[in-house]
Length: 176
Image (cartoon, rainbow, N blue to C red; front, side):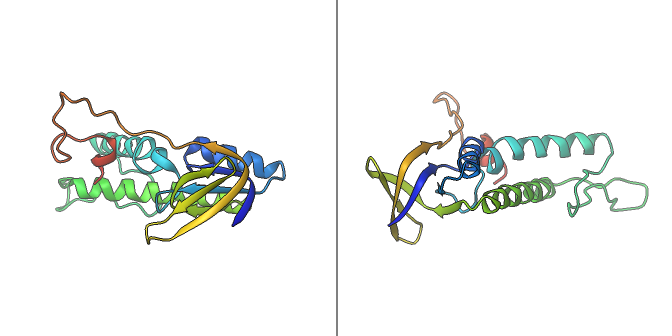
């Protein structure tokens, strides 16, 4: 069993800040994240994707190309002098590029502070250990003196709204 001073469950903004601060204070730290990448909803389905999508649309309607190195040029005309039609795939490609860059930054910050990232779903075994189950059926016990539970949230889906993830979507399903 790996043992740490602090185990943070969830790698969203709050989890990242807690982990990095503890590491800067000389503590051994791990972050348990159930998704394949760090960042939580803020980076992967919520704040950053929705703001990126909004910015891309605002720039396109103003006739500007979104400013981001490596992002597709969505204003390149199909024919000279005429702006081409923009497709949702291009918007999602632009957003995916921004998300990947932000995930890379978050990952680098954790690595630079010697924070171990363990991918899987954590469940408490007792007051000082969690079992982390990964997507491949494996499990690992992780012990810690202290835990921060920072598992984030999901979009609200009121029962009176017929979400179908096609026409009526939430922030988690928008870019899919």
